[in-house]
Amino acid sequence: MELAGKVVIVTGGAGNLGSVCARRLAEAGAAVVVSDLPEADVESVVDGIVKAGGTAVGHGGDVSEEDDIVAMVGTSVREYGRLDALVNVAGAIGLVRLDRDLTEMPVETWDAIMAVNARGPMLGCKHAIPAMLATGGGSIINFTSPAAFRGDDRLFAYSASKAAVIGLTLTVATAYGKQGIRCNAIAPGCVWSERYREHIPADMLDLMERVALTPRLGLPDDIAHMTVYLASDKAGYVTGQTLVVDGGLGSHQPWVGAR
Image (cartoon, rainbow, N blue to C red; front, side, top):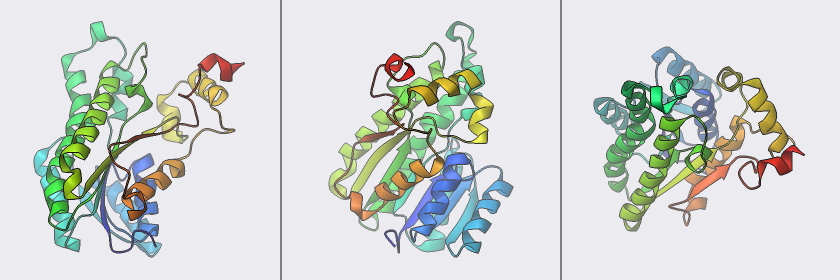
């Protein structure tokens, strides 16, 4: 098992992507701290992991609150004695519907998206790094988005927040690499789920399916497998990278795939 003996925190661990990442990390042998809100959803994910023979504990917390992040890292060290990897999945997907017109956007909407998508990963890195250094290093995996690379006619705060994550990833990798900290980012493309359907218009989903270079849209497992790899020692020479897992959506002119 490639993660045997390792301890991993997953923020947003009760969500669509985070819960699958947590399960796959546990299946690979890691002890997993599942962090999210509400706590009932967290416990459901933890129960599923334990019933499947894995090791996990829950933590109810808001990634934008520093005290919650301190408690989250403390849970890892208290329960398992160490922290080897942090997976920053938590994102403000529910606020995307408000991120439409920059000229009409309340500052509060901008701040709320930034608080989760940018401050959350920063706080995670801030408090995970000392715990990792105490045992010789570790791996940080931040979730960004292809929206960080491409313009849109909406998603102003979301795109800016995800671009900030890439800058954070590069700087953490540079500043702490010689001390054994690897830091990478994953940019998931269109990952199919019922929750995704709630936030993405049907015509946009249809377009994404047509322009993807693969026969299908992505699945949460496609992202989870990359997460397991980056958390493992097999990725020991991989750091400072943003790995785009999008079925080739961003690798060609969209009208080519739509023909």
